[in-house]
Amino acid sequence: MEKKTLFDKVWDEHVVKSVPGGPDVFFIDKHFIHEVTSPVAFLNLENRGNNVLFPERTVATPDHNVPTIDQDKTIKDKLSRMQVEKLRDNCSKYGIELHDLGTDHHGIVHVIGPELGITQPGMTIVCGDSHTSTHGAFGAIAFGIGTSEVEMVFASQCIMQSKPKRMRITVNGELGKGVTSKDIILYIISKISASGGTGYFIEYAGSAIQSLSMEARMTICNMSIEMGARGGLIAPDEVTFDYLKGKEHAPKGEDWDKAVEYWKSLRTDEGAEFDLEYTYDAEDIEPMITYGTNPGMGIKIKDIIPTTEGMEGSNKKTYLKSLDYMGFQPGEPIKGKKIDYVFVGSCTNGRIEDIRAVAEFVKGKKKADNITAWIVPGSREVESQAIEEGLVSILEEAGFKLRQPGCSACLAMNDDKIPAGKYAVSTSNRNFEGRQGPGARTLLASPLTVAAVAITGEVADPREV
Image (cartoon, rainbow, N blue to C red; front, side, top):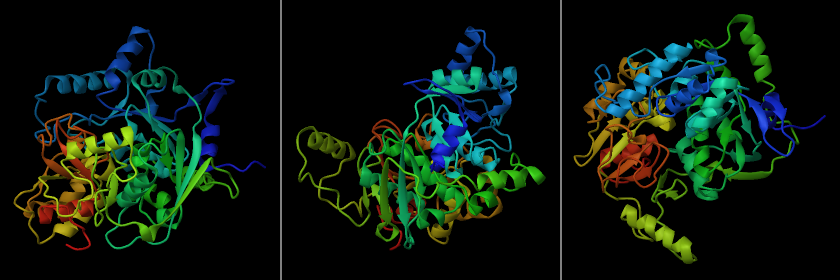
């Protein structure tokens, strides 16, 4: 009997037809859409005279460029308002489930999918957004697609896709104090680079990964594409089943028992081969932070910014250009750098566990005077939980400004922008030039590190604050 990886098992189950020497016709179980990438796809669908084949397999929410204050009022930005209105019109026209602004389950698409139990093990999931890889935490194959592919899924519930290679990254051991899943993934990316996963789908394994909560696993899978991978996934287990049980879209009764029986088979067979493997020791991972303009440019907070020793030609030139944008020098410590903004949110770290961690850290303390602190829940459900648990009161007393759900300052498509030249330590996923606003300088870190920065006003090790 052929030994298969988890990825192979799910992929092979969804191949409708293989094109010799070409891509597979690949069936999609769930299609998430939002206001930015769907309007053109809907327009093209209409122009071709096509319909949405399985509207019940599509779920929509506006998240990318919605305001995070005064969501009950008319959106001021004309383009944003038009995109949200188009999403509403199209969902109404084609009978698509929409979680709109102001509704109980509005939020970032990759937060509400798991919350509602729409995301389940063994599924194939796509969205016109690169961080669809988040859903892989459930043992699903999930990845981002372009506008033409969004249209293709509307019309046929399939896409043409070449099968990626398989990589396994194993992290064994116990995580140290102050070390989170965000530190794990930033550590991995710093080791294999922002392009080290190109062409691969990654399975994360090992005792350190298995010890994580579902929300922490989502953080890991979310940033798989920041090392160039097509996506990432983690085998489902009792942690997964406990998280899903009772959720709105999760199976019920006998269907639940049957589902769990199937889900338990979704693991890599002993002896199955991967195209590439990496293994890391959890004890070597410490609180991490980025210093450059791609997520691979990360170091332990206690370390110095790497020097140019051994770099040559274009690599050296590109490296120095990145540091020049950030206003940093090779060989200097990152710890102690003055910061202007902190941002807690995004589909990477905008869940309730992230907000709990920050609130616990800052309780009874005050943010530094030089810091503007934004905290943006990933969904209305997270917002409601944070209020009910008293976390919002703690955060506001510490000087944080709570905003309403949305992608917010992760990608600055709304008013939540970091001003040019200012430094932000962010729980989001990308630190590209201008990612959080034109000229903004972004350092990626965990919620605990962000909390430590908020209190001290500078890059700080959360284990020492």
